[in-house]
Image (tube, rainbow, N blue to C red; front, side, top):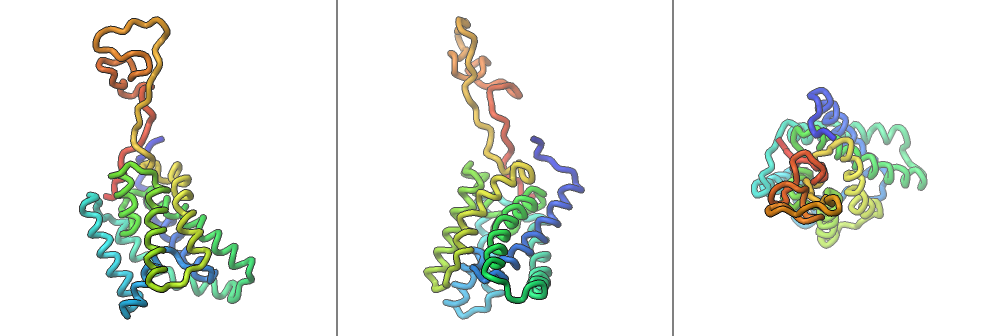
Length: 252
């Protein structure tokens, strides 16, 4: 699968992904069943420091972006758009949900929370797939994916669980939707990335290619099950000696 999308598709993915992310944030907040993990962390720091929540969010964004440096991540248009779009649309989405259903039933709250987690994973994959620059926190995730080779679901889930744990230790009460988000959004991003962000797939992994029975093992050639039959046992470029993978995430 090609990892290069047309400029139009990248723009559409970025825009819809960011609007979708903002909407899902509002859905989780309106459900009353628990905030997103990073918001739990922000609330915990604000609670202990006495700083306004907005100040904590901005400060944490700066700190997280400093962690980009050793990961060789670079901000892009999408990084700025992440801050602007989400900041400008979150309150309107909250007002819209308030007008549609001011006091959701228990079933409605559960539906909002579950749908919020699922759609947030898709929205995250969409704007990351645009490759115009991730938000500060997802840039940390893509940087770790690129440097460690670990799958997206493992890295994202580990980050979400860590910030939730810190927020809890700092005195924030957790809701079940927070736990669902922390454990569930990573796998959703991983699945959605197959179509929306294929560059997040693991790197090329060589595997042995069996040779015909009775094939001569000439000097410098690998034995059966060792490489692709090229000199030194190296897989042939573009041949069947490797599983097609994708390049590391590019946040430019």
